[in-house]
Length: 392
Image 1 (spheres, rainbow, N blue to C red):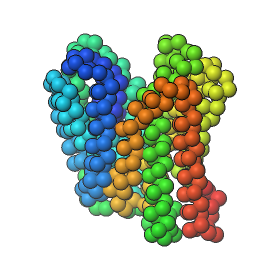
Image 2 (cartoon, rainbow, N blue to C red; image 1 turned 135 degrees about the horizontal axis):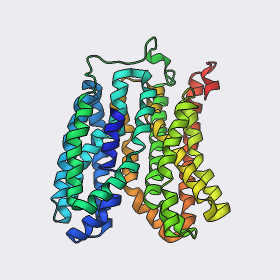
Image 3 (cartoon, helix red, strand yellow; image 1 turned 120 degrees about the vertical axis):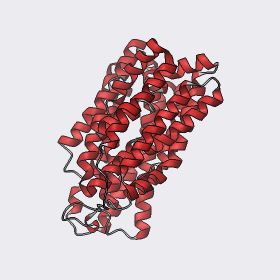
Image 4 (spheres, rainbow, N blue to C red; image 1 turned 180 degrees about the vertical axis):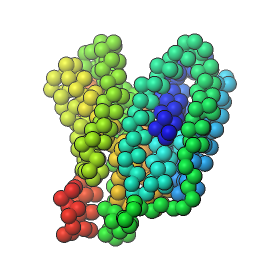
């Protein structure tokens, strides 16, 4: 249920501007980049809302918070459908930001952790596996709706889907009657970071927030500019768009790899491997040019898919289930902020350097891998002599 509801939430928010920004801009007399600026405002609002939504989920469970997010999504989309000026568009996206901060992955992850404690990793993987099809479903459906009922009708249709589909799915979630801190037979002392001192826990959380921010910058930058990068290698527009479309299925493949082959591995190991996939793809693209564009798209997508799961499971495995929602909200604040800036900042790099702008994303991926390695060393030192060392 959460996977399907998340597919709807992502398709009607995060993946909406890519299809509708041009039509909205033309209708109200502004540029598509201005519409994307309004979307960036939504991401900043989501960053501010996230910790508070997580705290509510820790206290009340995810059901009421996710139901409320469906209502706010519907309200924001309805407001957007009636926008006639730029300021109205920004206001509507600010409302959407409230829903995004309380109704996307972080809230879904906190919901299953609240229900299942340390056993939530499998559920987190399942949610991302289903929601990985959000762009596959959302982009064609938004395109179809825009061509048949216009962009205003498309927004109203998505709003109706939140009421008719999303809200009932979230309403069917179990009610929470007690706090579940850990899995059966497991205590918080069994978490990877149980032996960390307060200073080490703070340092580990800081490193984790940096990793999330760096990887989300790359993910958002590639989502916005991947076809443009392929054009810079000499590919035609048709080929560039077709190859860029491989990222979505590759992300789902990465989540399947995590579910089948890496589910017994610690998220620190799978995350480190995932951060190396993008640089490896960039190396192939640099060495072989356009002929390796598909390999780059697939490697980037696989790594990004695994990292999405790690964002949900790393805080759970290291810090435990208690207070997960609020902690996750704070950890994602830097990621939301850099995500808002990523399309503009990386767009300047692509405009100035072409395919050489990949040096920026490669550096960020390697920096994330280094941060994960330092985090691993911190935990290993805190558990010296434990068998945990071998698993990382």
